[in-house]
Amino acid sequence: MPHGPRPFRFDAVLFDVDGTLVDSIEMIVRGLGDTFEEYFHFRPDDEQIRSLIGMPLSKQYGMYMENPPTESQVAEMSQYTLSRFEIHRHIEKWFDSAIDALRLCHENGVKTALVTSKNAEELAAFLPNFPGTQFLYETVCASDVSQPKPDPESALLACKRLGVDPSRAVMVGDSVFDLRCARGAGLSCIAVAYGAGSRESLEAERPDELFDSPEELLAWTKSAFLQTSCAERR
Image (tube, rainbow, N blue to C red; front, side):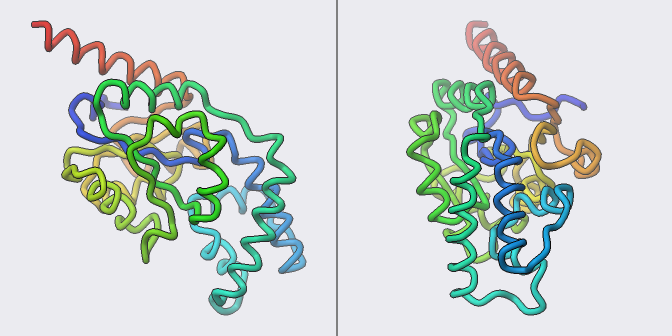
């Protein structure tokens, strides 16, 4: 990929969560599969479920319902889904190098935020155990906006809360929903191909950078801040 944005050029870096900072895809696939089986009496294959990751739960449910789910239906199914996530939580792992990239941004004075399709309840359950919570200035979840990703509203709200212009921010994510959200809001975008999205689908969105591993993301971040330090010394 051509080398585009550098963290030192930006006042803020927005990070997606699942598939970007957390290796949670298999946990999500199993939990959603359990939910579809419980409520819709069939289980989509894993690839179908993976393609939904990055959408809010309400939209994921709606993909398999004749009519949009009511608030009470979403609440009931969400509770069940969260309970199934907990059952499968033992297979979730941290992407340590990606979290180190988040830490480096924070330590170098760049404002950081999570921009996630998790709802408020999911996010509240996630943050106490997340080892990068201390490196965050803000969080934006699906419950904070009327139109979650891929709509640009989440990224715009994060920039507003951080007090930065969208043109001075970059989003890091593993799905086309992240990249479309970023582009629609006027942000630069970095794709990571180690999460839910396929490399081909991410490439088709023409991100400014694309990395195949958390280690590549961290190496790029280190290099960018090292170059900043050299420029400042000159």
